[in-house]
Length: 166
Image 1 (cartoon, rainbow, N blue to C red):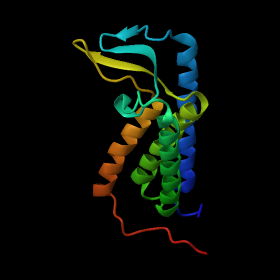
Image 2 (image 1 turned 45 degrees about the vertical axis):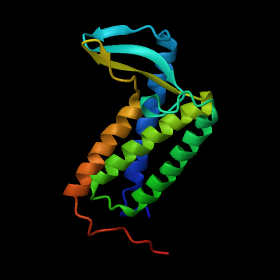
Image 3 (image 1 turned 90 degrees about the horizontal axis):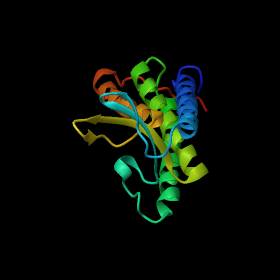
Image 4 (image 1 turned 30 degrees about the vertical axis):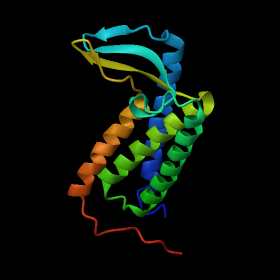
């Protein structure tokens, strides 16, 4: 399981993402004021916001049940990703990296949901008065991981799968 699969590398990367995500969110809560942007550049602010929903505030006003629904989805997806990583050969580095990024991001946001019932966001990108929804390190890792996973599906050979030696 550990030897030829990408599980170990993927879990290490997921842990790095999760730790960076939680450290930056802790910093954001201590250093920033809710809804008060701090301008970094002409297109980038740091702004503390809380999102009780999913991406783009989906389900944010659902009344509270979404906390546990989205947590269950994140946990389930995390389990699937761990199994997937255990079956991907270590040599499929783009797939392993992609899955590790997605796993770390999913669990980073899961920790927020379970701990405080909402996700801490603070990266605010904008242009000409139009703002992209605020996001965090976990969201960025999930997005980059998903894009890389799509690329990996077209570029990495799928002829090698780590076989279970039970």
